Length: 432
Image (cartoon, rainbow, N blue to C red; front, side, top):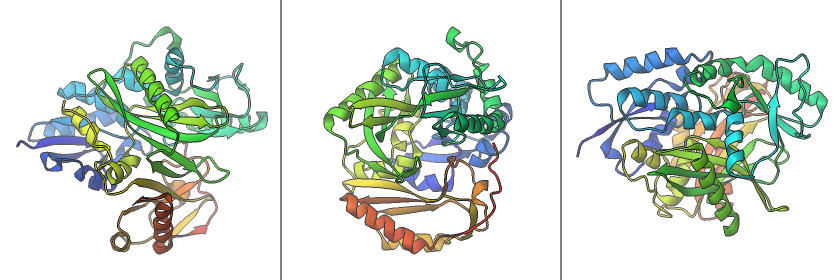
């Protein structure tokens, strides 16, 4: 059995256990292709990243069998560019950008389904930007591209709208400029003429139960392999946990699968995993697309392993190698699983963080748990990357169990055992 050399853009230690838990993992040898810090921190230069990646690949003494990634831009767009150069399998660049560019994605969704909010562009170049015609408060403002809800703001009135516009103006260039480099490689349709990578999108606020649909496209067929519930902190738009499988009624799950298939066919994605976020409003029975991602969610890897018996990385790897990407179903140890976000809702300094040895002792004491602590001791929380606009993640806690009560009990035990502590501090400021 020949070993396959898999180059993973942004491979980090936290994801290695899940990669090594995929079926037939002994067939794969994983190689890091640039660090996550190189890819997403500070000023992003796509040409420089491509040069660095090509140097790594050209220096490798062996066969490059696959180039993969499970992060958002620039990783999502580097994969098809590098795959084309090195003869490996990947989705096409245009289909990836149709997902990543939030405005273009909405235009494509509009062609396939009516399951989306009212939306429009905000002209950041005018002296006093205004909400788009037909889009009412409350609404969300967000750049065409951002990391993990960075620079995404919920606004309820004109005053909040102008404050959010000012914040987005200050920060949009960091990702918008390198995204323009990608857009310049494509033959854009007329509806995208002059839109560019530094555009702001406004869309009416959705409400209800947030869910995520994961699947893949293989040989032209769209397959959904899982639906997860996303539960927010009370009175807040920040996630408390993702829980798998979803508890929504079967007819709703069927509609989510149908809308997902129609959207992915319209976008033209091929040989790729995807994750689509939705809101389901139980009062109106409405399903609405929140966001389309041209990759599976690495955040959910352990959840699929706990319940189905394989991390969702399995489908990504099989697709990249031209093999059957089918996921196992309900072959895991637990009936349900969750990823919890332990958050701090004000800026501060991480003053007490557990060692890796302490974390491993907790995991050994509580089977069906995995813990990733996010800040470094002494780090300003506002200096952490990939945080939303309202909170800071101190730890991710994965739990598997046979009931929601068991998931919660394990999470509570983990949080108590971690003894995480922060000190209040004046905000260091979030770079835009």
